Image (cartoon, rainbow, N blue to C red; front, side):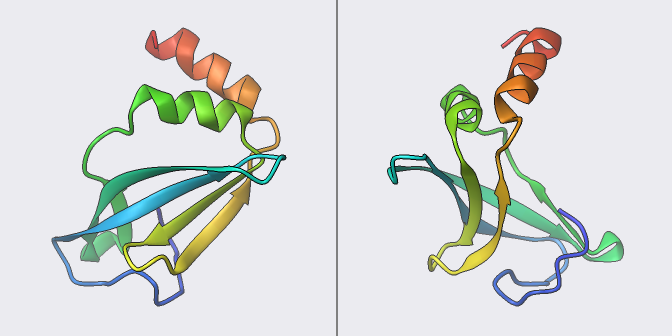
Length: 97
């Protein structure tokens, strides 16, 4: 993740911190996934330490909103998942999931 201007994630070079990916569905229910992101100062970017489980891809395909939160639950950012079912199908086809 690049160009994040908020303060919910730390900016200490070569440090990782826990995050929560939260998928909200149209019925109001949530599915959450624990993860860890690593900050690389020279690029001012966060990257995933490990891939998310395949269950994330299933939820991603069905979800309405994807939110990223820090370990304390503070919102980092959120994105619409419009078109995510198509994107998920392409990822499955290309990556063999």
